[in-house]
Length: 428
Image (cartoon, rainbow, N blue to C red; front, side, top):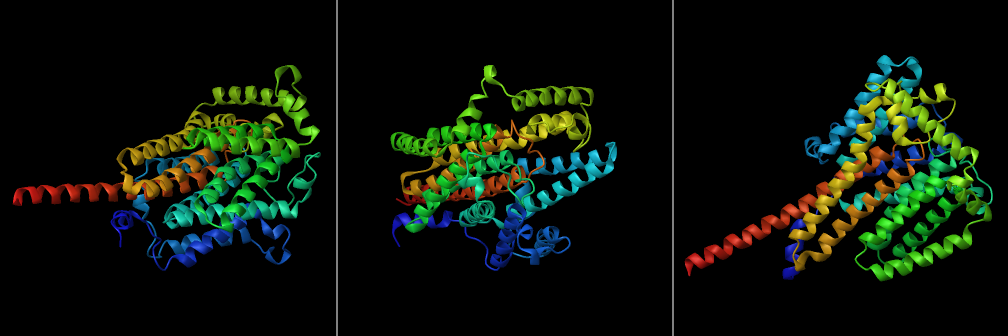
């Protein structure tokens, strides 16, 4: 074995043996949650199907060996905020005026918290994180295959039949903004035909965002592309690739898309845009009047007659200031922690581990880009109770644990080398 291989091998993190079946079960649970296949596959239309798959897996993971210990997950301070979010929705059940609305939301969030726990415990290698990314891509492509007009007829805005939180084109675009940088990660990490398939998938994701004609999705897409270019170590090739991507997107985009994008200007504001601004004002008023607990989850729509059109304003109105703080901490806290760990990786990495450390840093970057897509598109779409924030936090915590293990392993090797050299000097 070469010296280079010896220096890198101890830092690699591998999945624990015997957990592959549970990991595959997790992938099935994620596919089922996003794709909702029972809408088309009637043999899956059994009572509580969408709850049985993840809940049964969660119960098994409580007793299964070889998973990442929960105490290790909780050492990441962002993990605690996931449970704070769950607690806030539980309080909403107690104090909300309509019990059913808040209770249903609490059950939904509880399911997402369980997904977060299972992801953070089972994603014990970078390969497993990429497997989750691939599963999410397959789920989105399944929805497009079941709704071909959503991609093949971009002149018309289409709903995604059979989906739940992804049914509206705007919500589907937001999810695709998260998925795009994750597909870029697959394209950069794979070899051979897998690389070309991943890049092709990323292109389909961009086209699908354009096809939704979502203004929030377009802003999220632009934010993701800008961040990816900024983090790219090869700025010129990245800029050329972005130019080709933009050119292809412009060729694909219909006239209706450009007409809708022009309405983002104040001078051409349409009824939808004005309704969004009015909803924001209404959400601010509700939050100010109920700053501690908010008006209760899923109560904004019944009072205002429409959605809040913003993850942040929805959280403020329905969960009060604590809910808004929780959402902001989970979004920007994750981005900050990824950035800090990325800087530490490069600061302590030597030439012999550049490739390995670069892969870990790149994975952190792509997950950060996904969170940025959620943060920007979510500013215009009500996605506070969607699974994205919980899933991304689980993936980011897993990636940080793996990167920290690699960083810690390198530090230990450096300390051992220094001690050996000092001992040699004393003997001489």
